[in-house]
Length: 58
Image (cartoon, rainbow, N blue to C red; front, side):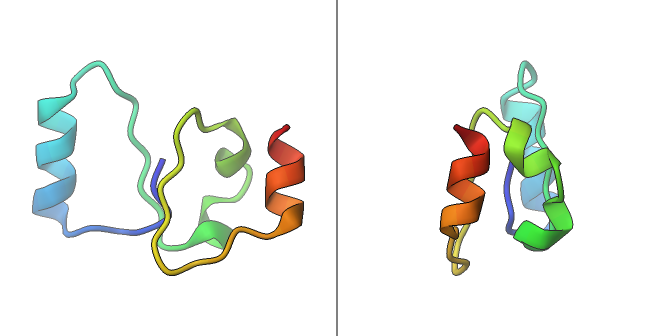
């Protein structure tokens, strides 16, 4: 899951190159909602994860 919303072309390339993955792209942590807490891998850029975010995932 990614909290950054890369350009559509890049999203499609990632999905094509890793067909076994279940990729979700959102425009920010808040937009990801509860999906954030179920992600196996989470990528973010320029947003701070709060203690609340981290504690809900453990």
